[in-house]
Length: 378
Image (cartoon, rainbow, N blue to C red; front, side):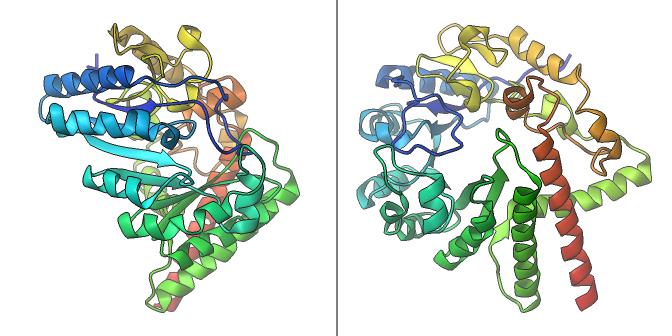
C-alpha cells in the first residue's frame, strides 16, 4: 500500500469573507476568520511534518475569501513569527484579487519571499461586470495603479481569469490586455457551475481562436506572446496521445490515478479551515464540516489517513466520466478532471461537468492548429 505523504504544505483559508462579489465565486460568505493563534498552530503543524519528512520545505499559501483582508491581523505577524522567532525556511505565497495591495505590503511580502497569483478577469468592461465590489461599483479602477506594482515585484506573476457566458466574448481581449501590461502568462477557465449554451461556447471558442492566431503569428515573428498555460498543456497532450496510442496504453499516467491528484488528500498539500480543520481542497472548506468527504482531519488531532485513503479510493472506484468518454479523443489520457469541481457540479468525484470536457477538446483543437501552422512556416 502506497504510503501517504505527510501534510507539510497548505492553503490557509484566513477568511471566507471578501471585498468583491464575483459572479462565479464558490465560497460561502460567512463571518469565519482564522485567528493568529490558529495560523501559528497550522504553521507549526506543517513545519513539524516537514521536519519529520526530511528535506522538505514547508509551504503556506494564504487563501480566502480575500486573504488580504487579514494581512495586518494574521499574514504579517505569522510571516514575522515563522521567519523571525522560529527561524524556519517556510515558503509563503498568496492568491489575491489584488485590490488591497499597496507599495508597503508588497515590499513586506517580497522581503519574506512571497509568491503571488493574481485573480483578475481583464480589461475594464469584463472586470467590472464579473468582479464588482461588495458595496457596488466596479473593481477595475482600484487595480489600474496596482497592476504595475505587482509586475515590478513579481515579473513572472500569472494572470488568472474565469470566463462566464454573459461576458465570455471579451475574455481573450483580457488576455491581450494582460500582455500589454507586461504579464508573461495567464490561464482562463470557464465557470463550470452554470449552463453554457451554444452561443456562449461559440463565443469563447472564437476568442480562443483569436488568441491562438495571435500566439502563432507572434512566435513566427520572433516575439514573446503571453503564454496560455492550459493551451501549452494541450499541446503537450498531443504528444502524450501519440505515445499512448503507440503503446496501446489507456490512462496509465500517474496523473490519471487518485494518488497523483490534487484535491484528494493524496499529496503533501491540504487546506486549513479557519477553525483548524484539514480539507483535501480549498474549494470545499466553506461547507460540509466533518460530514464532507473532503474533510481529512485537523491540525490539532492530525491528518486522518483513513479518510484520505477513502477519498482516493472513492475516486478510483468511479468511472472517469460518462458515456461521453467513448467519443472523446482525450479518453485515452484523461485524468478525470478536478475532483472538487466534479463533486460540486455533478455530485460525483469522477464525473466532470460536461462543459469542462468540451473546453479540454477545444484547447486540443487549437493546439493542433498552432502545431500545423508552425509546420507550414518551416
